[in-house]
Image (cartoon, rainbow, N blue to C red; front, top):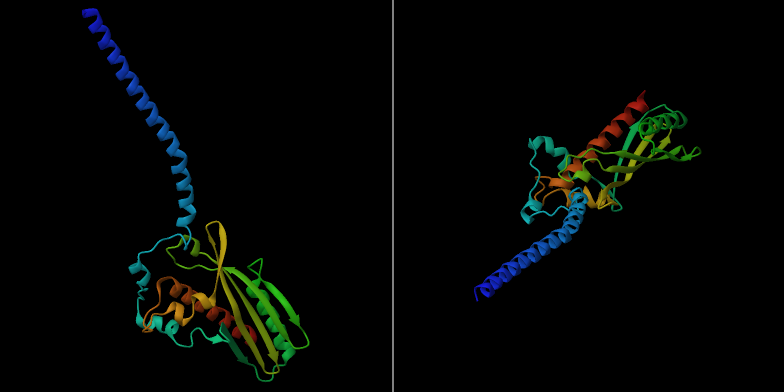
Length: 238
């Protein structure tokens, strides 16, 4: 009987060890099975964190507005005519009066100006030329620096068209067809200026503050427009 009792105890000990071994094996299989899923999820998280569409915001954060350092500094960007719409599209024009200067001379100046603007950008160029009407259309594509919490929007590609029209004594520059492109989930996304920088999209209802993201795009775009127009005036008067 003692030998039988001893054998039973040994059998029970062996069964416990077998059970523990099985449990360890199951845990190991579960760990191995979860690893690829965790790694896969981590892989998806990286591009999502770099795109505006993937970053989930709290509703309160979405309503939060940019805080300008000084109200007077913000005034030019809040002005009703800061981003004009022509036939529903964002469009700016600059007219430079040059009394006594022929259309031909101004036309040559415009060619030089557009070449200078696009020379630092490989994909920027004069796309259409009309020598008879003294008109030029240039396609511009350049990097834009925007301070943004969205990594993909720090340096979007800014595309726009510049058109010059010259007559005797006057040259006109028009900036239109503005589009911003950025990477989103391994895909190229685009936003038109009408979707981002208009009064409706970039300014609060009381017209006192800019919205966090679209307001920054609006300010950066207006600053770039001002640079282009100032350079145009200088080029015409040289």
